[in-house]
Length: 235
Image (tube, rainbow, N blue to C red; front, side):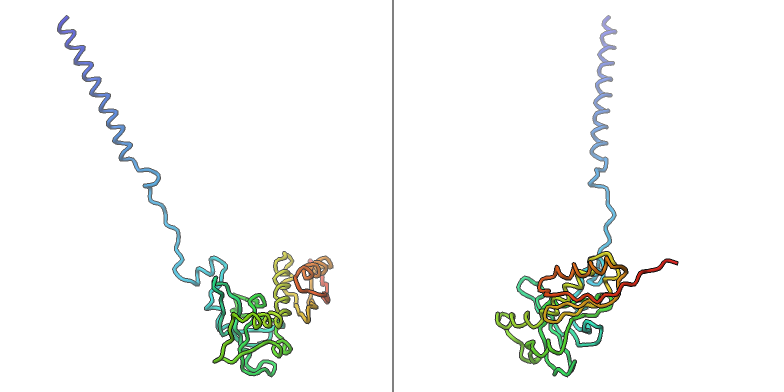
């Protein structure tokens, strides 16, 4: 009996040691097993220059605008972007343009409200609905004597002088937001708040839509829709 008791105690001791070893091994495996946060992740591709940043975000770089050619609403060469003027928040307020003899205008600079500027980023071209009458009444300034941009009277005069150009840009933006691709090619011309639409569209519905969108733009007094309907034929 005494030997039997000793054997039972030895078996219990062996069982206890084995269980402890299993628990210790399990804890060690947990400690050494890599967690989800320890697994290395594939690093995302980093954008290393502003050009690629602009391409990936849809934004544009100021350096691609400054120095760009300026064309009028009909696509004719008109001038050049000399500089950009920003407010204290960093928002662009004016594009400073030179028209170098365009329409007989002298070599002066003009601050054009940013909402009157249309940009074709791919072609590095700036479009502004500029006319001789606009340049004659708009306050220009020599290259060596810039105006005080904080002068409210000067700012009011700028916005008033370029109001037609701002309307044209807003109408073009409205038309471009539509799915109808033919509206992208519509020529827009504004004179004293009266907007003339010229070009071709694919249907009467698109033509009527162009008028409705144009009327939504603030400052539009009337719409003259000269758009021609040319149906697309499928062979």
